[in-house]
Length: 191
Image 1 (cartoon, rainbow, N blue to C red):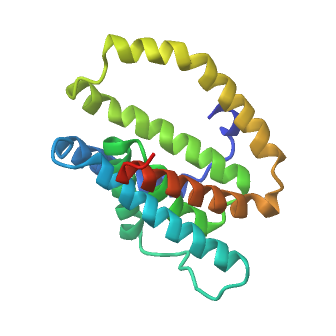
Image 2: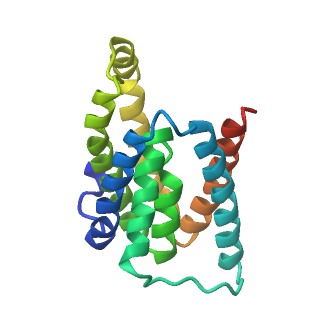
């Protein structure tokens, strides 16, 4: 977040965060009833289709993408992001489906994503406390992995800044397909 603190889009955050709060709340309420595997499989399939469709558009396909959709649609994507993040730690695909077609400048997209998910993760804390997720084992795993997380974040910042701006979205869409395959395989129990 610190690396991109001056590059973010307040409009995207205003559009998605209220819905995300509702999504986290719904995820908390339905945590026992919703299969995280079903959420992962569905997200994986949708991510693959969305990423493939957007790559096709990038190559000159003729599918129009409404960039100025109604605010309530953005709120729905916020709900989906909060819900899938709460249930399966997989809020990225719905967020990307709403934000990526807007073609924000690379650093603004990354900064907005970092701020959004930092806020979203703090919003989830009360639900995780209520669900008993803060255990000694989880705290120990967090402490052990913290150096890896910090180093990975720093490496990620360097990598993002090295990616040519004109290729950024194509790379992200391709990675979205890869992530979609992983989510789908996890959801159906093949990974």
